[in-house]
Length: 176
Image (tube, rainbow, N blue to C red):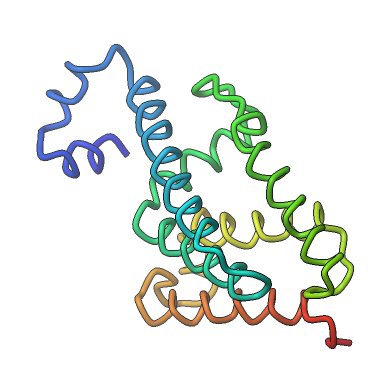
């Protein structure tokens, strides 16, 4: 919300609106800055020279922790994805496509090297997207469904471990 953004930068909501022509411009700026920060974190994780599961595990953990710290980014992405970019004029697919294509190429290489089982890498990455974004964007629904706070530190850690385990089994060359 605009109130959360104003609080995060240490000003009142009216002052925030004074610096931007519209609330959409504010959300667009938050999206742009957050996407750049997410990109830097993921690039750092990817560039560490790890292979196979170690790299996947680090990227999953890095992304998950970023979303924990930046729930507004997840909400903006979810809203834009549902409304096909109608709110901010962001072509989300075009913005994220280079990440998808790079990841698919890397997974194909790792599969060919025998480090992972043969999977449809596009489907794998769509699943990863759905799992990661769904959990954070649907937190209010999950709180009602589970009758507890899904954003509680223990719940978040349990979710991260589950996601890591799920992908480890999905990619393991020896899993059934």
